[in-house]
Length: 289
Image (cartoon, rainbow, N blue to C red; front, side, top):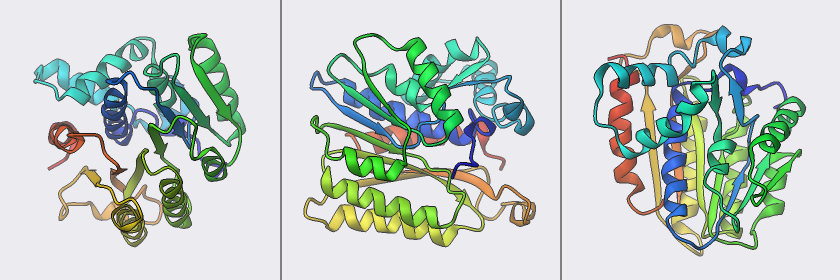
């Protein structure tokens, strides 16, 4: 949806979970010399100013990345690998009042023979994405930016020539039908590129439980029962215990998002163990018990 702008939400608690999971996957891919392909279907602008009036209006970064930084500073706890890596990658940007989104995190991991495809339909976000990538990329990096429909482009790009890799998909889910469209697109992508790690982010919404459950169930069924059955992993983080979600979040004008999740097809080895540790840690930072 062209009305969606990630500037309102960059650096929020859901981004923290998504990017911790993404970095674990990228770290796993980069451990081997064999090249890989990344397709990021909803890339956004790549780098966001924390002084942007839209970020300041929602205050979500204050309760996300900045809250995590303050928690680690005050408590100096032992950090799970993904959280340590996330803070390592984000701190240089935070020090310049900015925040790195998934395209920049992906760019930092790709090497000379790897390929990164970034897809963004929104015209303003596309222009900023181009500018941000052009200003920071290494000349030897193969990065392709597509100003086109996310799912049509994903279909056109799969399977890629380099068949080791990752699809990251995090739509806005502004329309309830986006859950069905996402499942359909990723099931098709998995059939065409069955070796890829497929990581889909989704919000936990009080008024979309049926759509969320149907999407994840469809992805799981397809992954486990297709011609090339594989494993899946799902992790979810709620800001509240299941019986303590505030009534205010069910009101018509409320955000309705009380948490978020990641669903992974073909998860890297031990991703479940590492992300379960991450979830326990992030809940200690963000969850309101």
